[in-house]
Length: 502
Ligand SMILES: Cc1cc2nc3c(=O)[nH]c(=O)nc-3n(C[C@H](O)[C@H](O)[C@H](O)COP(=O)(O)OP(=O)(O)OC[C@H]3O[C@@H](n4cnc5c(N)ncnc54)[C@H](O)[C@@H]3O)c2cc1C
Image (tube, rainbow, N blue to C red):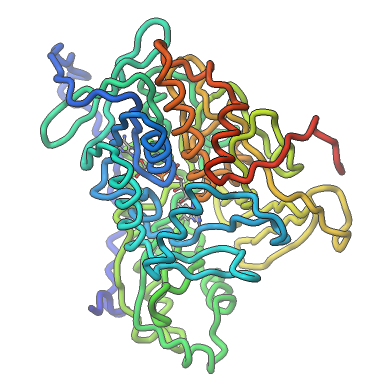
């Protein structure tokens, strides 16, 4: 379906103001009358948010004997993969592809996608990253959740929390077509990505970096009708397209948006691509007015990108296949946890006594203020992509460029980073774990989120067998043993952080 012709691109700028309307009546607020809320579910473990982290938490807890309820606001599970079209999952192996460092539930869903023929493997012996069919992922997530006996609630928003004075969350309040309802549980897992439950329950959170600015969100969309052969023959590749597009500022709405583009060919068809070709700086997507502006702004950015793409050989007949159901959100709130993991600890591969997950994806920070991306890899390499698309490589560890690469197999995440301060029976999983802004730049990816979910689900099931649901009473060494039994190849801890470089 041809969706856009370049000549008819509307430019209704400037965009309207999406900030809350200032009251002109003088009435600034209402007091909501107290009301009875029915208890709509009772469980051992309630998981809020059915993204990659939440699904794995629910599945792990259910398979370990807990009665589990999983709440999700969309019509399907999978979070940013399925609602925002993000179709790349990162490797399970160390950077040199020699050591498997990730397994368990993230690996299980990859195997399920493979059975559906819905994954393309990259790297030597298929040990690199994966491109997945995000529509098929909806089915694979369903199979894991339903097959594990999890009770599910779709189209339901977490809207509040009932918390006792001692810091125990007694109920999660959800809002849905049926109205408000309370979900009681012994233990809760906050997998909303935005730490919504923790914030509603009054636990301390941090947003973005030191200045409160977050990595920008990106709307991902799919295009079809690309003639790859023709593009190749004309010398048009990703690099060429990026350089050309990066040379332009998006020339509408005051021209203040730097161009941004990366993408991946779909699993099924060579003429179809997912493009992450937008970026909205200066917004915090846990604020509704910012979130709204980001959605609308990004769709206009996408139209600008489509218009310019059509000028490349092979792209003349492109058409819009679909647009993510929501903009992809990289960063909002994170919990302040029992342990805040730092970038340095990640990159140096510190292995904690209570490590419950390992990862390899680099620190990847999209400039919150404007153009540019910075990567810091476990092997010592730092790579910066500037606003004009030019790339500079250097080392983050003080070594000269070209020095032997570091052989760190992975980084590690301690159980304490999943425990929010101030709450007794809550764990988090996914991108809102306790980490600095820089460390979160690495931890936020989906394979990691799923690994945290796996561990949080096991821990929640264990905590739910106690009368007080205390997540601090869970023995991390027992948790590690169970994770290993379930296929997570956790390495032995290292004694302490060794200083490296400058
Ligand atoms: C443009 C972009 C590109 C990316 N590229 C990659 C990539 O290539 N590979 C990769 O692995 N990662 C990538 N990421 C990061 C990754 O997609 C996310 O960080 C990851 O999905 C986080 O997983 P999560 O489970 O913590 O959160 P999410 O995926 O955000 O899932 C949270 C879930 O909770 C639900 N939810 C939220 N609030 C509520 C509520 N109040 N009530 C009910 N439900 C709620 C949401 O609907 C969602 O399903 C990218 C992110 C973006 C934005």
